[in-house]
Image (cartoon, rainbow, N blue to C red; front, side):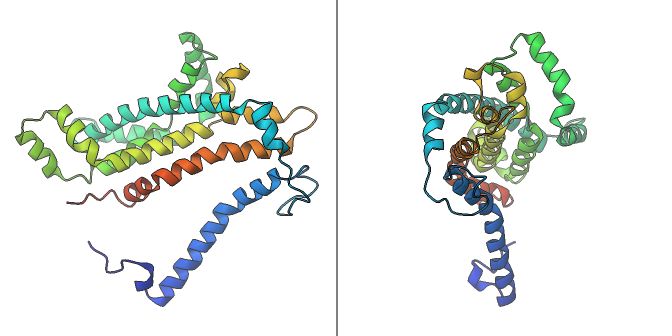
Length: 282
């Protein structure tokens, strides 16, 4: 169904005002923590001038020590490698399984959807013992492989339903045309469905990457060697039993959140296209 409103100026005046106010409020709520964090990272002692008070003088030692003393780029490399590999593994598996569930009829289809949906309600702490025990039995404790395995199997339900929703909006005629041309299921998937559903798949991939990049619980539990730590686990080194280096902590947090922000800026069109309903032109 086509809407007659193509831009904000065509909306009724009342709706336009409410929309603008809502957007401004959402922007303030979203940007306030980031602005506060950035201002605090420029203060020598954030506790001496809390909140949004501007620093008396710009103090960059926190940023300098993060790169010079902590060698943060090594942890960036660990997080990037683990996140990318786990995302590739999970998205390949999920995109193919979601295609089967979305486009084919088989016994137990509703049960599969139900079982995946129920995993959304299982907290990570409830899986601590079985996952920890499995990692030890496989002999991969304190390795990047352990985190890749955990991350590849985490958040499957969210990625599955995002991709599945997009598959369901792909016209059936595309598949029928591919079958007439002699394509099998795999050829139809890789050459027809996969390219058309790319926005939904990219959205799921970016969401999975952000989740893996920011994950702290499993990274701190599975990895004990400092040189193998991921970026979020590195933040714990700023806090000891006696004091917390808030300037270094806030500076490191600013550096850590830059990749996700840049990633979203690059792929934001996929978010908008996929999360707006997965409509396919044609």
